[in-house]
Image (cartoon, rainbow, N blue to C red):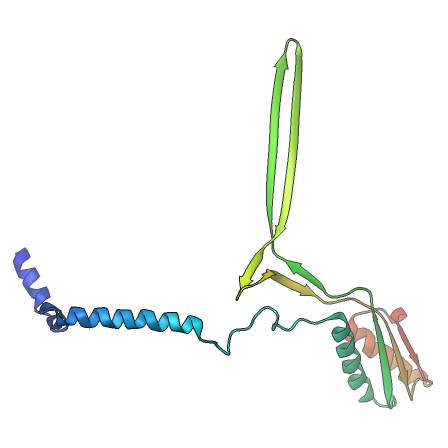
Length: 188
């Protein structure tokens, strides 16, 4: 019975080229060609790869300028505001949080001498930022980017002397930035 099963496998049509040895040479040649193409793909430049230096990261000044521009666009579209200028102050800069690995070591020793006992214990903790290598450039593994907190906003606009306009501007700024009205100043 096992002989019949073996015979059935050798009669399969896609195995016939391998029976005379020519198919094996063809398969080896295709395999070598595939490996050469893989090696070449590593050496040839690719337009889709970005290095860590090319990944855009917001700076504090960029974040402040973007926030000011967005507020100016928002406020200029409001009735009675007219043309306006916005100045934003920030409490801190952009904060980057990197992945860390933590190693903890604890040592405990006990010495007993005639009637006296000495116990010593030491705990040691070491934290290191995880470093990754991208195309020969070493950078930390970035987990998240925390944007700065807004400290205050000054709005100078044509309608700044009107109490109703001032109230609407303060409401819009406090809602947009999630800050208290004490941190917003509107003037003409």
